[in-house]
Image (cartoon, rainbow, N blue to C red; front, side, top):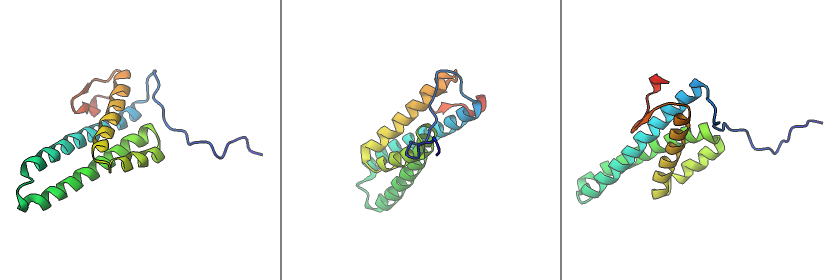
Length: 135
């Protein structure tokens, strides 16, 4: 009989206080940069929508832009959450993106987790994330 528990949750990567391998840090930095760009795009679409919603000719363009930003944000959150929590939880994060304000909060919280990991490993993180080439 096998000693493995078939009902055990899959192991996911947990950040440690020690150093982490550089390739994983590069993946986190790339995913974080994508998440931060999604946050900026999310805020830009909201701002543009507020100022231009009264123009009927632009409603379709604004809707298409909002869907594109949502998809970009969902892919970004999935990539980042899969690095930290595993693919199952990443799908739950993406489903959370469907809730309007929760989507922005998820983007910001997952980005903060990446910032903490990168800074713990001595990597400088700027407004749009860490420089991937410097890692």
